[in-house]
Length: 475
Image (cartoon, rainbow, N blue to C red; front, side, top):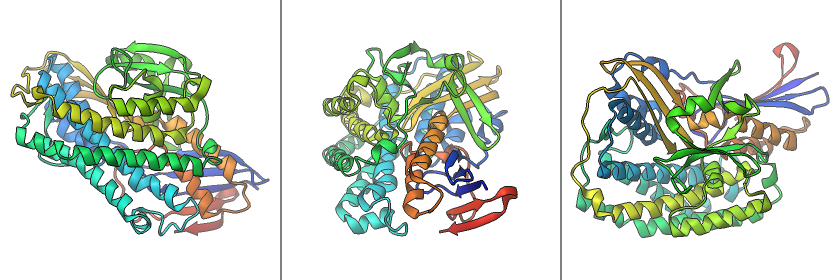
C-alpha cells in the first residue's frame, strides 16, 4: 500500500510551503515534491497601474527583499524612459543593493540555518531556532543581529525607512547622499568585516563536522546562471548573463538581460503555484538551472575585492578538476563569501567622493512601450518586465523571481534527501529537518509569492489509497 508523507509548512524559510514524499508498498521513496501553496497575484493586479507606481507596489511583494524589487523595478522604468541615469545615482543604487545582500545573507545564515549547524539537525525543534542559538552562544547570535542591522541601517539612511522605501525611481533616486550619513555608515565597516569573517570561519568548521552529511544535500549537476561584469567578474547590479553547465563549461555568455525571454521559459505544474523556469535550448527539466550565491561564484572569473577573492579561490578548490561546485549545501559557503564581498564593496563605494554628488535623477516621459530591469537579488537573478501604453499605463507585467528559477533544483534536492534519509519505517524529527534543511540551502523567499493567514503548524501525514490518514504527527 503506497503512502504519502506531508511536511507542512516547511520551517525557517521566508514564506509558506509544504513537502510531500511518496512511498511505494515497500516504504521506499519514489518521488518527493516541494509545493508552494500560496497564490501569486502581483503580476495581474499591477496591470492598469501607472509605471511610475511600480517601485512602491513591487517593493511590497516582500518584507525580506523589498530593496531588490525596488531597484529592479526602477531599472525597468529607466528602460521605458530610455534614459541613462546619473553616475551618482547608479552608485547609490549599487550601495543599497549591497545593503540588501548584507541584511538578507546575514538573516539566512545566523537566524535560519546556523541553528541546524551549531545545535544539530537532531536537536529539540523547540530550541533549534534563534532563541536557542542565543542560549548556546550569545555573542555569536548578537554579532549576527548587529551585522543584519548594519545592512538595514544603510537602507534606512538612504531611503528613510528599512522596508518598502520609495527611494529609487525611474531615472535615478529621489535625493542625494549626505556626508555626515556617509561617515556614520563608514564607522560600521570594521565590525561588519570582522563579523563576516567570523561567519566564514564558523562555516568552515561546520564543513568538517558534517563532512559525511554534506554530499547528500542536493549534489547533482545543473546549469548555473547569473550576471557578470565586462571582465567576467562577480556582478550584482548591471552586466550581462552567463550560463555555465554542471561541468564548468560556459555554454552562453554576454546575453543581454532584456532578451531573457529568448533564452528562458516558464513551465507550470498543477501541484504548485510557483512556476518552473528553465533554459529554453535544453527544454523543460533538462534545462534546470540554479541562480544565487552558488551560481554566481561558479560563473564568475574573479571577485573585485581582495578578501572575498581569496575566499573565492578557496571555494573553487572544492570543485577540483570539475571546475564547478554542484552541491547545493555550498550555497551557504558562497553566501558568506558574498557577504564579505558586500561589506568590502560597500566600503569602497562609501569612500568614493562621487557618491556625494547632487545630480541623482534623469527626467523624461514615456519613450518606449517595453522595459526590462534585471539585478542580482540575494537569492539570484531577478527580472521585472513591463509593457505600457503611451500614457505609461501597464498592459502586462512579468516578474521572474530568483526562488522560482531554483524551483526545479529545489525539488531535485528534496527528492535526493528523502531517498537518502527516509526509509518509511521511522519518521523522526531529525530526518524531516534534514529534508527541510535542503530547502534552506537555497534560502527561498516565498514571501515573494503572497502572504498567509492564521496558524501554520508543522503537520506530517501518512496517507493511504483514497486519502485515508494512516498516521499523523504535528508540532
